[in-house]
Image (cartoon, rainbow, N blue to C red):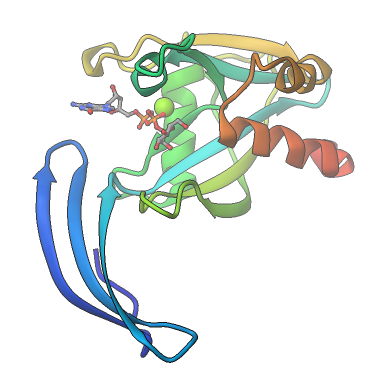
Length: 198
Ligand SMILES: Nc1nc2c(ncn2[C@@H]2O[C@H](COP(=O)(O)OP(=O)(O)O[C@H]3O[C@H](CO)[C@@H](O)[C@H](O)[C@@H]3O)[C@@H](O)[C@H]2O)c(=O)[nH]1
Ligand SMILES: [Mg+2]
């Protein structure tokens, strides 16, 4: 991780706290505040790389393809943790478009010829470095080329769901869909209906 240059911010120390699947650093910094004073701050920064996600949409049938999988951080909150989400994955050093086409195939069995980039977003900028690239992929649900389900040897056990678009939107209101990236993509689709079928 390389920090940005800004005259208001001076990094004093970066201390690795953990280096595993994720890395966690304790960062000590000085910030020039808007009242002219200088504050010394300590912040913990979680890094697990960049990510990408995609709304797989069949314009003919008005269906979206979503995935359902166990999310342990949600489970540990004492909540129902088989979350319904848009396919997503970490970049593994690839370009976002390449990574999301690979992830879509691994997780759902659909071959995406061209993924259209919509926007990028920081998912939790107060603590996590993750920046997610959001894509749209038009598919024909009668042309699934593999079973999907994720990579068993990496512990993935993913159920593939075909959900009518209107039903997916309703599931945001009912709480059945409660994953931020999924809500963002479904809302993008609601706001850009015409672009979906172009
Ligand atoms: N060893 C190990 N493996 C892990 C760990 N956490 C996840 N994995 C494995 O790493 C892979 C991650 O799968 P991806 O498909 O690349 O990512 P993702 O879990 O879909 O994550 C994306 O979506 C999440 C939900 O919105 C996001 O939370 C995440 O940051 C990212 O954007 C899976 O094989 C998973 O089992 C861990 O702590 N240790
Ligand atoms: Mg994934």
